[in-house]
Length: 174
Length: 421
Image (cartoon, rainbow over all chains, first blue to last red; front, side, top):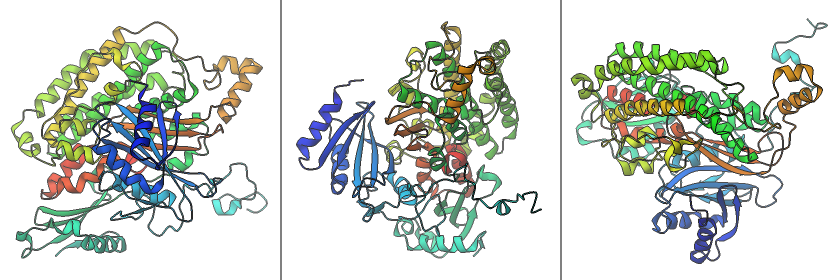
């Protein structure tokens, strides 16, 4: 595969969207391109229509929670792939946790429907313009977003657990 | 008006949602206005769904007017679990994604970690992996295709093909001791070389399987009844399939020759000569035929890999991740320390972001791994092909009969474990 494309595609995006591309880094095999959250729709639309790189396929949408990044706690990550040129890129948009809104790309890629619902379900990212944004894998009545970092999994070494709630009794109590 | 509802509250809520949604309304055609529109629950635990899927169907007689899916019945929070587990302990989680072809999931995960740590994997490991992954693909496709047969009423092929799947499971057993949730291999390779029993069983399998598979093929693929039942059932066009994120055999049945093994080869797939079968109509029959041909191509790959197996080690030189041999662990202090360090995830790991994908039984199976240098991934996301293409299901079955919905579901090979993570 042509390794040159990474800088080229960042440059190409910068030419077309002078203010939207904020940063880029080369992460192992795929360039990470950070963009302004408001421009995600235009950029994805542009990349799909554009014939130079022909990025036609949305591989995955996900989110990452960085609780220490004040003002940009949530990162929404779009994995894109061009099947004809075999180019993969990752588009990232950072959102503040108080206002985790970003526009939906469901009308550009219909497969984004469930991916966005899943991201909402686990991270609480609100996709404006999504037609049916509700939980998908978790229960509808859940009132938190489980993949955020403030919800720790149980620590195996903790000692404050009350064994009675787990069907186990200590010798003295049984 | 029948309303067979399981959990009435959920059903009612979903139905209200359904009727509100204009998108579904446009499918209700003129002939159904005067007729009776019934709402039925197809699933979650229906024998014909082969897994836990709920579909709320609106039907007029046999004809499906609209469908609404509920997923998540066996959600097990794998992505959250992975954030607390050392890298070695994530392999058993991947088993439980697509449990019809666990070795592909395991090996895909190992390769993701190897990409992150920059391990140099010997050629022999690549070839061993290719053999195991292609065996897994055969097992996966055999189940899917024989179940399509069952859903059309042909149980015979299923029983014979389960016999063959059993032989593949015996081969896994010779490599790792497990059968369904295999946890096969290690980061860096395999725990041991292929045993002599594996070699003899694989030779027998390669000799006997094509004949039995040929019988299965002749039983169904040109069978008048089977063709009438499957052609034109649950079709999807190439453009639509790409829009819906299809990958794997289901996309190829629609006529797009996208295969991860070819577009971004991993594990030395570029060394092998095989073709990517494609269909035309993207219907159940094409999906069946594409899988049949892929089984033959997988056999070709296994034969090539097996006859050209390079000499060398069955593991990479990654002492920070590959457990030392047991004889060392019991007799040598350093080996024991390393054993504990690896099991507890105390070894150094580079920081970075990696996306690695393999061609799973159902399509592009991806792993998006973010490491912050800690003992567990900072974030691990699985690209689960089932979850993405199952969205297209309502569109594919609208206007078709209820029995066609069953066939479409089984020919899409939607695996509940992969769907719900």
